[in-house]
Amino acid sequence: RKEVEQDPGPFNVPEGATVAFNCTYSNSASQSFFWYRQDCRKEPKLLMSVYSSGNEDGRFTAQLNRASQYISLLIRDSKLSDSATYLCVVNLAGNQFYFGTGTSLTVIP
Amino acid sequence: DVKVTQSSRYLVKRTGEKVFLECVQDMDHENMFWYRQDPGLGLRLIYFSYDVKMKEKGDIPEGYSVSREKKERFSLILESASTNQTSMYLCASSLDGELFFGEGSRLTVL
Image 1 (tube, each protein chain N blue to C red):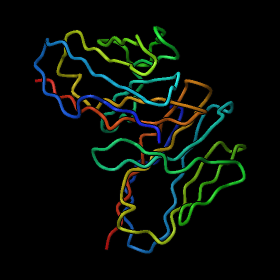
Image 2 (image 1 turned 30 degrees about the vertical axis):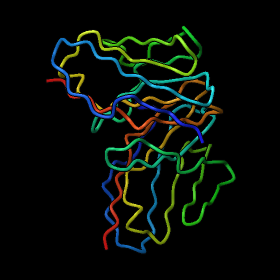
Image 3 (image 1 turned 60 degrees about the vertical axis):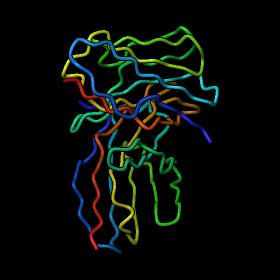
């Protein structure tokens, strides 16, 4: 079983739509959770950390559900510039990071 | 801002050649990592290092070695490149559970 599972998509949504991605993790001892954004042929960059209380940054909202072992990312009012691959990253401890395979999003004019 | 710099963005090598990929970080992070990223497989850990001269194998260390002689520099070595090592190689350093990636080195082995 994979440590982190993500729906690879692709998600094709019109501009202005709301889109949600989920990611599940298998190890209940996981400590830190992140969403990274990766543009085509570029490196992943941190989009936001994910906390149990949920956190919001503009049009982006991240949630963590420890009981069900999943994290989510909600993008409201999608922009063309949101088109990218979104990676779920889980830190078990110290040096142990686990990655989802990424969810591809294309926002269509 | 944390900066992780990979020396080569694009490389083309021939089978059997020795390949060096260098990575430098400027934030005094103890932990550094080498990953490769392939379509459909995501990021896979090759090696990581938690201190100078310390290294640990990741999930796919075969065919690779690493060197960490200074805290800021972590090198990945392919002793004898093979076509199945054609990939995107990403170096990262970490602090407080957050990863900072270099721009990546896209290696093609012919």
